[in-house]
Figure (spheres, one colour):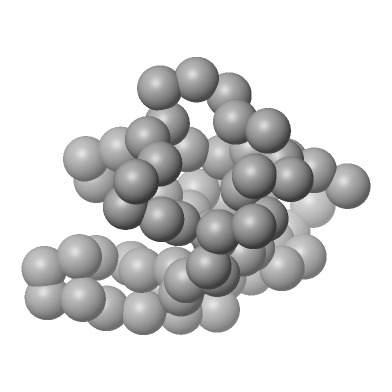
Length: 65
């Protein structure tokens, strides 16, 4: 599974966005922490276990096929 993030400073997550609009935003790297910026390392997804990939203070996940 590959996680990808798209972000633009003019967009806010106030409502569920149109996925075409999300994909039109620049792709950005995922961070494990913002201060100091640390890239999210590879994570292992195992059957029957929960995997959390989040950053404080808020994270949003929209899943699309």
